[in-house]
Image (cartoon, rainbow, N blue to C red; front, side, top):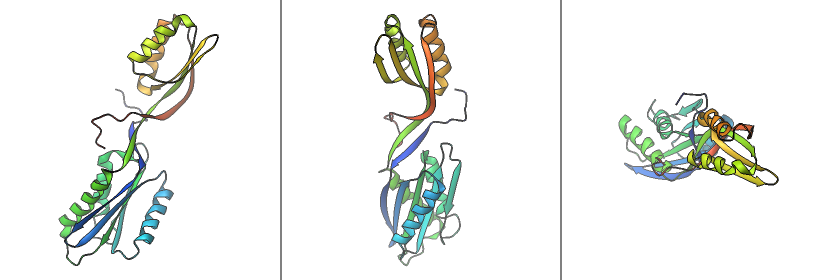
Length: 220
């Protein structure tokens, strides 16, 4: 498939929390959906106020369908042992519009660089397991106007191409509204024109991201 500026992605719809105790240090991961840098900053400040007595509140967030905006903070932990590993976990999950804060209550025993990376990454992965997500796909909302003679052919084509039908209106003629993945749009329009001998009226309504069903092999 040819690459476009619109990439399919996984969107966080509901966050979660998880805890991990490592050598008496308590790690609490909190994950939440965010739509902007301002929302992410507000969430991080909220967690810092909630866990004001903790030693560290490390954070990371990823915003945008192509992860256009990313930030991370070690919040006083040794450089590269908390925020960056957390960000790598988020990027690896392919989830977008997501922010995470991992709070650490120090237990009196130093964990070392490797131990910190494992703890911050591990508790965040644990929280991600309980998050809820949906797949987002970029496509075109198309209205197909036709007479009753071509309805069967059109419905057969839509079913064969697994095109999502949004609405059908049966009046003097038939109006079918569908959402087509952007990469299939041109070819589906050509096929609709061919099977109806160019009699179908094709009206592009909008280009948008829309939810698609999660596959059974989803990593979430």
